[in-house]
Structure formats: C-alpha cells, structure tokens
Image 1: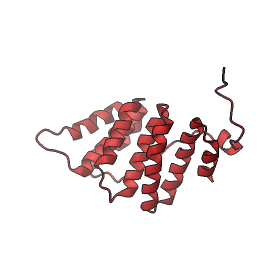
Image 2: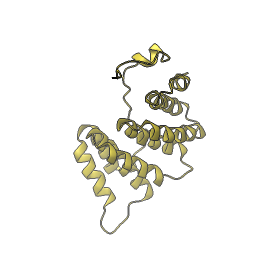
Image 3: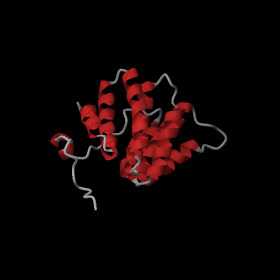
Length: 173
C-alpha cells in the first residue's frame, strides 16, 4: 500500500523538515478578570477553564455582553483544544467568530484560523482550507501581516494532504 511517510517530490526540504508549529493564544485583551483567569487556565487547567467559560456563558438572568460571549467561547475553545475535544473546540471558535462584528476583521481572522486548525487536527484539510482562505482575506483587510503570514503557513499545511504541493510551496513563499 501507500507509504504515509513518503514525501511528494515537489515538496521543498524546508516544508518537509519544518517542526510542528505551536500556536500562541490569540492576542485578545480580556474584558475582565474572570476572562483573564480563564485564558490563563486554558492551557494549565483546561477542565477548570471550560467550567469557568461555561459559567460566564450561562449567567442566570443575564446574557453576557457580545464581547464577553466571544471571549468566553474563545477561552472554552482553547481549553477544549488542550483536552483533545477538537469538534467542540472548532464549534466554540466558529461561534466566537460568528459573534464577532464584521468590522473586527483581525479578531475574526484569528478565530477563523483557530477553527481551521481544529479542522486540520480532525483530518479535514479541505474544510480548513476554505476557512483559511476567508481568514487570510480578513487578516489582510485588518492590515495584520504577521497574522496573514501565519495563516499562509496553515494554508500550506492544509494543501499538502490535498496533494496540492505546488500551491503549498507558493503559500510559504
């Protein structure tokens, strides 16, 4: 059968030998102390962060503000990613993106990239690529070259399993 470790000949050594990239938490200034604590705990105590984020989303008698909702969903998504709950993390990142106003293109791009990375981790490169194309355009609209560059790296990671190596190399250029 096919050798899953075989590298297509068109792939550059830089792409083939690149170590796995860790993604820092998105640069989002927490609205309040609860959200700051949730974000800090997302990597170290992910189950506690999921519970804290859920409590913010389920405040009895009051709906959280749109900004708190977006950040609570982001925190819960990051924590769920740490727990390996990729389908749920993708849903949280997507819901946070959908709740972010269109005028906040940079944040929408970050959240879209996070959702796309959850899709990649689930083995869904075509779905991830479609979302990364949108996120890349949003990052460019926001004038955030660093974010757009990171998204291009993610696009390359989505293109390789789709056997679109030439495009992957171009995304890295």
